[in-house]
Image 1 (tube, rainbow, N blue to C red):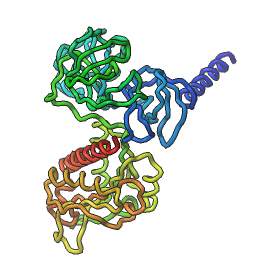
Image 2: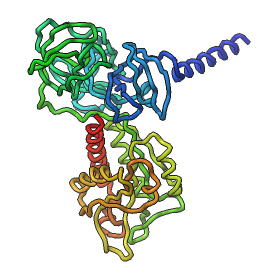
Image 3: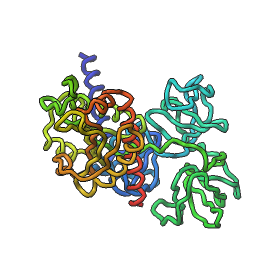
Image 4: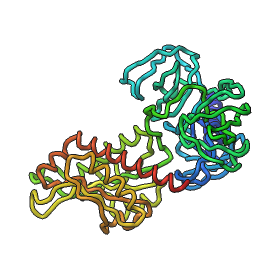
Amino acid sequence: MKLLIFNLVIVGLVIAGFYFMHGTNQIVDVQTIALNVREKPDATSPVLTQVHREDRVTIKEKKGGWYKIQTSEKVDGWVAEWLIFDGQSGPYTYLPAVITQRNTELKKNNQKSSKTIDTLRKKQKVFVTLELNGWCRIYVDDKYGWVPSDSLDIRKNQQPKFEIDDKLQVALDNAPLYSKKSETSSISTRLGYAEKITLKEEGDYWYQVSTESGQKGYMRSWEITNNKLSKNEKRPREPLPEHVIMLDPGHGGNDPGAETNDGKVLEKTLTLATAKTVKNELEEKGYSVLMTRSKDDFVSLSKIADISNKSNADIFLSFHYDSTGNPNEGSGTTTFYRNKNGRPLAQAVNDQIADILPLENRGFGTQDYQVLRENDKPAILLELGYINNDTDAAYAQNKKYHNKVAEAVYEGVTNYFIEMNKKDR
């Protein structure tokens, strides 16, 4: 009986802990390495500050998949709900950390199979520059490499000590130069990666600096470094995990779509295989991805648009393979949009499809498809070749072709989001 009561108490504590961690007006510990705090609950909204692993924040409100939080510095802003506790990717940052495991391998890329360029010892000091899909890019012993995120402890209170008039550099892109020691003060200008600055006043969190042009202002400790950085250094693209992409594999279930000339391969099978490959690519590069179907299910056209509209997706992409009345009449890829907000996305993705895919590109334009017409999100439909063209169909059944589609979609949507973010600054 005592054991039963003990177990019930433990279960109760776990449930209470869950509500504590996810309720409003509660103090929680951030689990993600770095997370942008934005002005509004929108991935394109201006970044006010960052919070980092083990920072304590107060959840004040929930809205559309976003939490309004207050940081320990009393800054109010919004963070993505799906990232604050278990996010696997994050923005550029610059955080002191220590290795927590013996013989940690420093990898050239963020993969276990990647070349090992060094072996790090337990408690060795490093600097974290970003997180991507559960791996952290770090700076140690004058070189960059990757280690698993769970092999690090962040030590924000161990920032290097600088001296007045030290020559330093900006550690991330588009870093704000504040007029006062507050994220709520005005931003004098924004500084680029590796831009040179001089320290004028030291602090625990804020540093007064001077730019090469003589402009003074304040920057936060994790935005500057005395390590040597180069503007020409090749860096991975910054992950955009706050951006959510909805993928729609066309047809499915009792709607097979078109078929190959021999009748052996159905459009619904190819669209699902393509969408899964794209999903894997986008998630590996740090995006959050949703799908209207992940197996051979039928989803009605009105339901597809409804799923998209009710989700926290930023954009919608539907995958199809075209067909003509007679075999081998048509060939090539086409991108369609319906509503005005879909045009920039269509152009960005189609530009990459034209550059990367081996088939002729027929351009992008409008089409009154229901999944586009009834969709509130920026939405496009990709025709990735003609399934009843023997040449196109051979490509469509090849995994390498799906990989190229994934590459084109990644490059296209990333270019799109970068441009949208610039417009909203």
